[in-house]
Length: 247
Ligand SMILES: CC(C)(COP(=O)(O)OP(=O)(O)OC[C@H]1O[C@@H](n2cnc3c(N)ncnc32)[C@H](O)[C@@H]1OP(=O)(O)O)[C@@H](O)C(=O)NCCC(=O)NCCS
Image 1 (cartoon, rainbow, N blue to C red):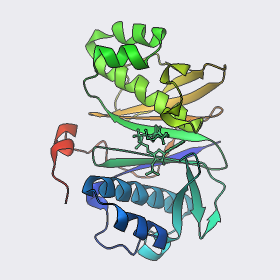
Image 2 (image 1 turned 90 degrees about the vertical axis):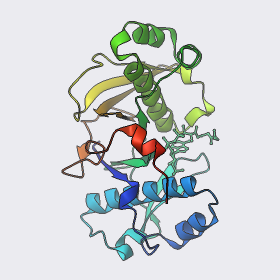
Image 3 (image 1 turned 60 degrees about the vertical axis):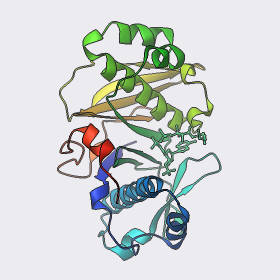
Image 4 (image 1 turned 180 degrees about the horizontal axis):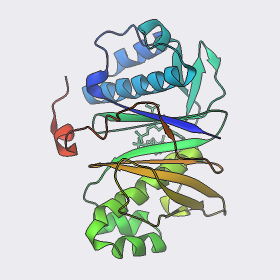
């Protein structure tokens, strides 16, 4: 199994709505909160552009409108192309005005999650992390927030692979990561072990204040970039993204 990934930011979202499917247009129109609509739109754009690139399609409005993520009953995104189930695993995530999408080359369970390196309280670490994960955070005081947010993100990615999301206890999946300070902008390995024994291999990547994790069921090579320059690598410091007023 191979995966590809792409990130976009809100500034890339087209002004018009011709690139959305009819269902997506209706959904966006019903969203009352600007931030939720902005998150929805940047996530849709990221998925559509990622899939168009994987398929070698152009990225004009009419083509993008034929690519759609539809939520399954459990909330997990299902990829539809021209109204037909595409038989490819996808995962979506957004944070602070940026979105990322992971696309598999077949019907695989995949998960990705984008987080900021932000302050996490001791209560957060105590309540949501397992004992060994808490020890890992405590043993890395110089990069405590990287460790805490990375572990949280990898859990979310694995919980997306499992399709439960946060319905499941975050302590029922345990993250293992060796190097907390690898070079930025490159994928480094991690793994997540579920309480029932399954191990989900994965990778993580840091871009300034952004952490992106990716997991799957079964081994896979690091995700391939669908862009030559990743917008996360190039993004302004995250606090500016968080506080920037949305249109
Ligand atoms: C999956 C979940 C952990 C992601 O939360 P998050 O960190 O706030 O959001 P992210 O931006 O990283 O990911 C959001 C994407 O996760 C995906 N997702 C949602 N439920 C999912 C599931 N059960 N399995 C896999 N992926 C899921 C969706 O694609 C969603 O984006 P979209 O709605 O725009 O298509 C969270 O939505 C969740 O736990 N959902 C299931 C439980 C639920 O519905 N609870 C109600 C709200 S608490």
